[in-house]
Each structure stands twice: as structure tokens, then as C-alpha cells.
Image: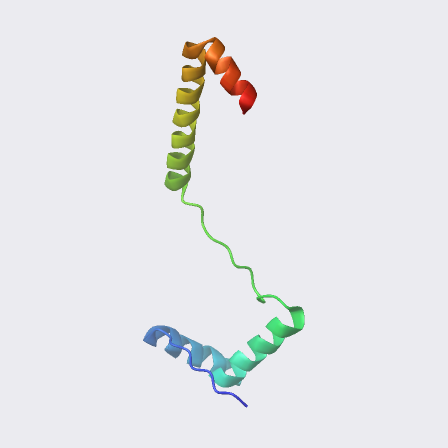
Length: 89
């Protein structure tokens, strides 16, 4: 048998204690059940996701658009040399 320590925010610990008490178990039993379910299903037993930050995406797409415009403007100005460069890509 192995002991595992988990660091929790004080408030989260209190809330988890209350939940476990309501379910008739302690935190050790809670984590044991969680672990067994994760190992049985070979996945985290709940969905893990992240919220997309639209400002970060807008900035990224904006930078990509500017880079592409600058690249295409350069090709238009260079004429035959740009055509040769484009054929290399």
C-alpha cells in the first residue's frame, strides 16, 4: 500500500470533506474510487477542456494575415523573380 499526498486549497479541502461526508466516505476513499475508475477506463473520468481566449486567437490570425499579405505583396512587386521563388516553394 502506498500513501499519496495532495496539496489542496483550504477551501477546496473543506468542500471536498463535506462532499465526501455527504456520500458516506472520506477523502482517501474518494481518491481510491477515482483512481480505480480512471484505471478501469484508461482515461480521466471527466471531460478536460480549455476556454479559447478569442483575443489570443484574433492576434494570431491577424499576424498570420499580415505576414501573408506582405509575402504576396512582395511576390507581386518582384515579377519574374517572385514567380521563380514561388515555383521553388
